[in-house]
Amino acid sequence: MAECLVGLGGACARLNTTPAPRQPLHARRQWARATRDAIATGAMRGKRTQQATAPPEDAPDLTLGSEAFEGEEWQPPGERPVDDFLGLEDEEEEEEDGPGATWVTFEQEQQAIAQLDAAEAAAAAKPRSKAVHYSPAAEEEEEAGSGRSGKRLPAEVRCFDTARIFVKGGDGGRGCVAFRREKFVPRGGPSGGNGGNGGSVYLEADPTLNSLMAFRRQVHFRADPGVPGQGSDMHGANAKDTIIPVPPGTMVRDRSAGDEAPPLFELLRPGDRVLVAAGGRGGRGNLSFKSARNTAPALAEFGEKGVEGWMDLELKLVADVGIIGIPNAGKSTLLSVVSAAKPKIANYPFTTLVPNLGVCNLDFRTTVFADVPGLLEGAHAGVGLGHQFLRHCQRCRVLVHVVDGTSPDPMGDYRAIRQELELFNPDLAAKPQVIAYNKVDVPDSSDYWEDVREALAAEGVPPESCFAISAVSGRGVTELVRAVRTVLDALPAEPEPEREQQTAAPPPVALPGRRDSHAKIGEFSVESDLSGPRVWYIKGAAIERFAQMTDWGYYEAARRFQRVLVAGGIDSALQAQGVMDGDTVVIGDLEFDYSSDKSEAGMYDRWFKERKAAGIVGRGQARWPHATG
Ligand SMILES: Nc1nc2c(ncn2[C@@H]2O[C@H](COP(=O)(O)OP(=O)(O)OP(=O)(O)O)[C@@H](O)[C@H]2O)c(=O)[nH]1
Ligand SMILES: [Mg+2]
Image (cartoon, rainbow, N blue to C red; front, side):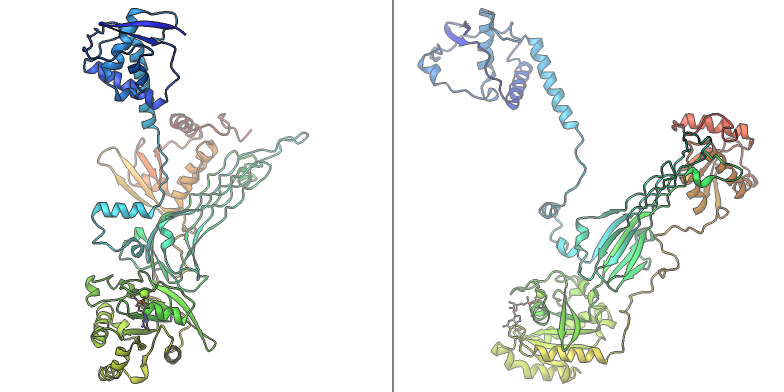
């Protein structure tokens, strides 16, 4: 064990210089920082220039083995005064730099600090995962922090009946250029297969769902791309479609069409399915381009890009009967009694935050009940939870109005709710209704029932539509359901649930999620911007798709594109409007310089230069004319 004597003024300390066990990284970092700070503040001026300071008279004897030394505990370097631990070491080094000493010079120390700093900076600059994980707690915290929680509805409510999703159809797989190469088969001919079609995204009405809550967790839906074609005549497989389940009663709006646009679709019946984003067609391989004139084509197409866009979803539940009433009236209790649904029931207002559905089976007849959150007077102005849940009653054919028998003023409650219905939508108020005077098991409320019945009759409610029930004990509930069923049966038969509005495009004609596959190349428009650098914009579904699918890596593909411009009338339209050589022409994402030179040599020359300038990886042969030989 190497030892050295350290002279520190008058006091002597004998220290062990055997390298200490390596400290953990954080301790070493702390030490490095403390050293740097000490240097910055002038507490330390390098190992060899440090001046020893005389210790105070009452300094403890730190001689190895002395009482004070034994009692001293190790402290993290950062928590010790820098002078203490650095000063000692300085003197030690000055006195004896024996063979076992492990001192570092000031420069080495600086280097170590710089290295640690660099490592820390690199760790901080390291890109973090972009995945955003949903956490309800975090969301609530964020809301509380933003100070909006008081004004906005609870997150659960907000996400219940509206959602915004992004859908993207899968891109088509690219076509392949390949030639059959086999022993004893000279000039085997083209054998590149087509790419597979990309998957499409559909929405499907799923009867097991009754909210759009699932879209809080997933917003982006992308279908798989098609598999690329391969040699030996192998076509790529078509990708599977993505089906997004939504509750029946969901309306779909195209976000890009604006808020006022009518809905694109309404999924009403379980199993209804609509296409919201079509997948792209697979690109053709060179096998498909084989013809009598060109028996060895060296070109293939890219796959078509899938349709993409944001969709707004809005839910209006589909139920036969809507249960409405003031908060705490017993609506959820009634639903739990007439059906197998298990909504939350508790003795405080606004227990129910989102509507619940329940299926009632009575006398071999099935009726769907919807229990909506409680309403208050002034709900139309946002009091309570507002009246937005009433939209779910718009598709109901009958309303059950639950009146709380234990309320101080049941008739007042009844009138307030009727007024809210009128204010929300007079059509809703005009729907047939059945009154359920609840909680008659409580003596006070049963005493008051006759008065309420009379008051209701005075308001024009027929006595056969009024029922005194006790949802908790089930008293009167069967009669109530039978009466509801009778009213339902008396209504004109409705094979289809009422559609809210005429949808923008009835399904089979033109689905907005599908690209217009019947568009013709000749259907285009030309716009120009000649103020600065001369630019011409060609707009047309077919020509834009054609430009996107052209693989510029092949000369034959570029030549084909050029021919199509001429044959489709785009070239002559540009010339008629005064296009000049060198002008920029933009078609979709494609941009190129116009040239009136249509000769094969000129075309090849331009293609070769542009390909090189754009850094496109060469595919096919660069020899010209290669396909004719
Ligand atoms: N005594 C008695 N209590 C009842 C009856 N029906 C419901 N309750 C009680 O009333 C309270 C409220 O019941 P809920 O079914 O949650 O009322 P709600 O109308 O759904 O209330 P919100 O969802 O908050 O609008 C609960 O404590 C029930 O036990 C009844 O017939 N008799
Ligand atoms: Mg409830």
